[in-house]
Length: 148
Image (cartoon, rainbow, N blue to C red; front, side, top):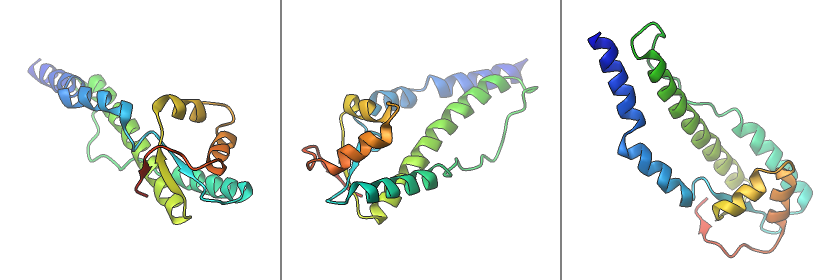
């Protein structure tokens, strides 16, 4: 009984910790998440090829393997599994974004901050690659230029 309570308390502490809540609040202006590349005068067909190559490469960037896994039979295993899945998805997004930043930087593209609403308009559409290419071949963005 104590083991179940302790495992559930640890999982609840992880999910309700102030660091998780503050990270969620900070995400609104997070330049590691809301950014767009700029083509610096590259033609659209070259940009499309570079984007497709880097997206295929970044798609393989999986999360680091965890040292321990919680058994479902263990007390609190479900909550621990949920907490682990949340952490893994965030880690996977960060690794994918990092891989994409590195790949596009190696191809010579600049990176600019983008407001969340504009980023969602581009990235959450059916033709996201075409919208990214339109952004990357357009005028130089007026937002903050980020380090590669």
